Length: 81
Image 1 (cartoon, rainbow, N blue to C red):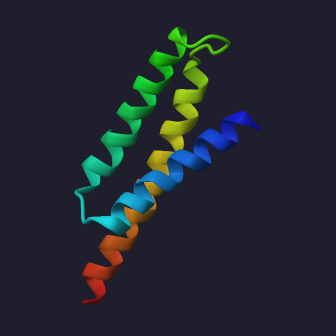
Image 2 (cartoon, helix red, strand yellow):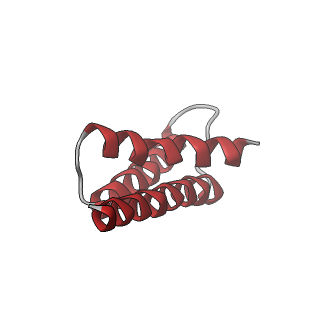
């Protein structure tokens, strides 16, 4: 269940960033993925927490899925205009 939550939260990040500001797709992809890597790295310094590669991969999968949907949406809107 934890991995699904990571994927869902990181799925929402590019969607909100895309809605708030028109960012290039590579920024929407790289920003949250890098943030997830930093978050997992810093967990080793928090008591009771440990970094997991699987958490970062789940978050990255959520970001990739959102960016795919955003890319399709932008392509479809550009094509329809």
